[in-house]
Image (cartoon, rainbow, N blue to C red; front, side, top):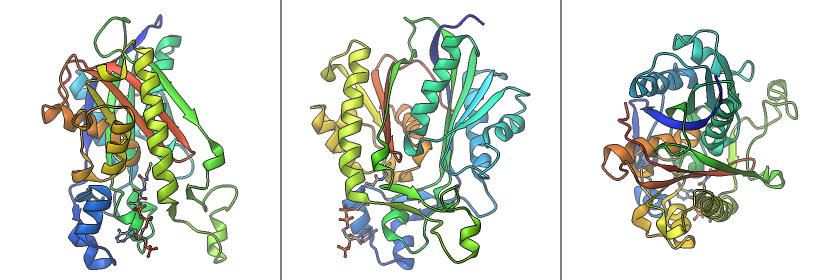
Length: 334
Ligand code: COA
């Protein structure tokens, strides 16, 4: 292995079959289809059954990405997730094993909804260093396992799912090459998106003493503002690194958090809104799975075509954000 550029060469996705509509939620919570659609753009989300774990979703998406890439072996598996099967160990080695990939390097990447972008950057880094010539990068999350059943503001937004890509070593002028990813963080905002219990600050055993909060909490309005600013700024930087002006971006495939966020990012970048593919109406916010799921949907719906100057971007807890430019290659999602 001698290093090189990282080229996207496969894309696979998986959604648990059970779909929950806004009307389904309204039967349980004080909410309505009208409120959720008008405030978020979301119509349906998929929810895994309680016997399922994140690794199950990741394995399905990973298998499909390998099939899409036409390859059976990789040198590393990176899994972006906030909902690992267990706090310890990481879930990626289990996924690699279940995919029959042998004793390859495997680790989890924790950057909440930006996890997939961070994992892409880490995968490209392994290729550039010559450590790997093929990397399976998966984003998989099962937020249904961390949402407060009584919290209408998070239950309306999040859904479960997984998406994966294969990166291979290639040449800098090929379609599908990832251009120097842009990554950032601001830990002063760590309280805006948080699961308090289950780590060293509030160990799980605090829950058995009746203390601690095991659920995902989000300060929606602050998150909204930060998401718009950071994704727009990172996307413009990523485009510049690829040598494109903002107006030359054909597709901005952004983390599917909220339709109003997607529109605000496009407006801030002075990009026609139609250049931002929308998938959240059908799946909600699937966290680390959101960008690869949106990519696959954009390709299969004919919205994203080979040759398109494409920017991927995401924002999430941490706070974290990222963006990456890629001239879209000829890939058939599986
Ligand atoms: N149905 C009905 N009412 C709801 C609701 C729901 N599903 N969710 C929240 N509300 C209520 C709130 O309780 C609040 O009621 P109150 O005024 O009586 O307290 C009211 O709506 C307004 O809440 P607010 O938070 O100001 O609404 P909003 O317009 O900001 O929308 C979000 C809330 C969560 C949809 C929005 O802030 C958002 O999308 N933020 C970004 C979230 C995100 O993308 N996170 C992931 C980023 S990685």
